[in-house]
Amino acid sequence: MVPAVSEIYVTHYNMTDDLLQCQSVYIIDLVQQLFGIVEKHTTITDGLVPMLIYMDLEAIRDLVHFDYDYYPDGVMQLIRRSVRTLQFINIDVASADAIDLVRDSDSGRYLEYPCLHTLKTRSFNDRVPPQAVLSKDFVPFPRLLRLSVRLQYPFADDVFFRGNAGTLEYLELSLYLETASLLRTHRVFTPTSHPNLKCVKIRSPPSYMPSAFAIVTEGM
Image (cartoon, rainbow, N blue to C red; front, side):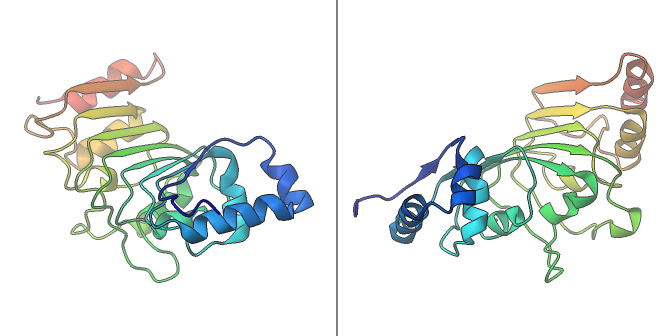
């Protein structure tokens, strides 16, 4: 059974739902055996995520790359097992659930991603409630190089920007008026912040752009 395998790249597989419904013994057994023998799992993307959640494999940990467009129940268990090794995360979340990325809802402990260099997320619905704002001493992404936050910025403070002012090189942000004001209040955008930022990609409705841009550039 391919004993020399050391890494697995799980990519898109359109028949995942069908396999789960019919509980294909062959496919599930194959995946279980593969993940049972590898020492380091590298990449999880797209279609097999529901299957991996369904099987609840404890062996799935120490991921480096997690790329999935949805936020099904159980997906954070996969991420939490790999917080020390993940380098890339792309995930869609309801804004109210975004706190699960930085705090374990079961234990209440904060999650730090010491190796993460790229975080891409699309958030929607209401923000994480203000009362859930995390400790100012908490830095979840200290080595972040690339940050992409499309649609709603999910927090009521500067969580995504903490501790990475000296490392962040690329920023993509949906800049609505409320987001601009919030980040300005928390001094995310100041004349001296993010000295290594090389590319800023702003998404904003045309009617908001002048006002939002004025807010973040005031005094710069």
